[in-house]
Image (cartoon, rainbow, N blue to C red; front, side, top):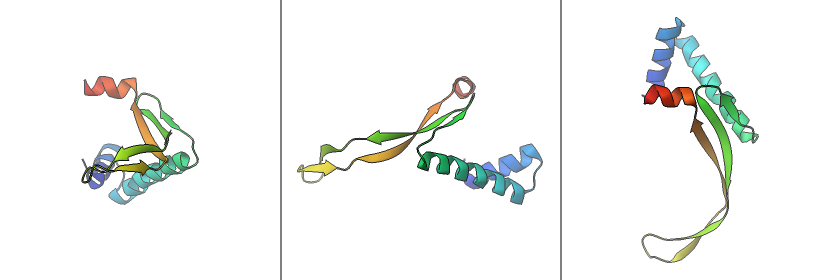
Length: 90
């Protein structure tokens, strides 16, 4: 499912117009992104938790040449599925 299909599904299931569903989906994405950018986590009980993980700098190898290279430290978004989502999938 891509973003347009998600918007269509939200519009159909909620009775919203496609334009209002687009605003709602975009609003959710923006809110989650803003919270993660501040370093907060977003907990959606029964669905899952979005959080931020810090990765340390490390040494890796260039796959083409095999030479060692430094991988910079970075911040990565993480998602951990909640019990409700896990149960729905299994």
